Length: 118
Image (tube, rainbow, N blue to C red):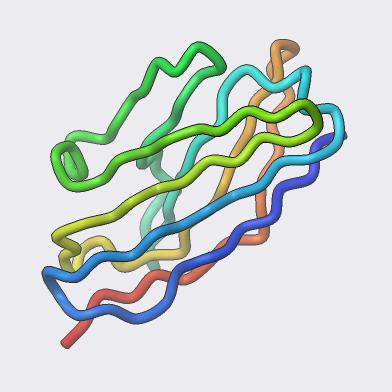
């Protein structure tokens, strides 16, 4: 089992910045990739960014150049951070931390609300 605990999020004005963090614990040695997804009201959940154990990153086209994902590996935990700059109203969504193991098991955090509004 893998446990994911998210922090960050909140309300920010357009053009502002926020930082999301997600700490994974448990059987972290099984984790291959971790990332962030988001889901806006009435829309499907979509990938925002992810990073593999070897630090290969993937970003949604809509966030490239504005968001940066990073990963810190420790012996018993893994933390990923999502630095979100130049935020737009369309970035408003619930953001979910996700992890996938080498066996393709998926784990999800509880979600954190990001609202971009003036």
